[in-house]
Amino acid sequence: MSKYDQEIEELELHKYTWCLHCEIVHETVKWIENKHECPKCKASLFKDGWGWEDTESGQHGNVFTTVNGYPKTPIEGKEYPLYPK
Image 1 (tube, rainbow, N blue to C red):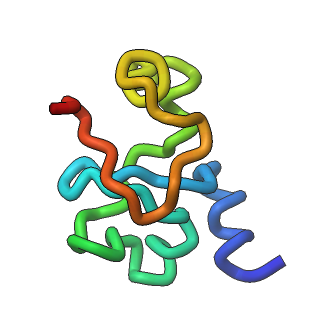
Image 2: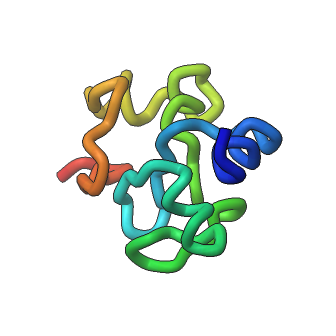
């Protein structure tokens, strides 16, 4: 197990993290490798990163998969607007 995998497990993070600022999904390990910042816009993992799987449990009201119809497994690097156009 890599140190990043261990950190993800210890912090109970998810495989994918969505950024509140740029609305792009990246693997969580890429956020950690980038000093806990979004690889695209440098937003904070802990303030602005939403675990994609969290949306399934209702923590954020299932906005991605239920309301917006996004896939359960996102495409990394793709923009998923919180409010689709």
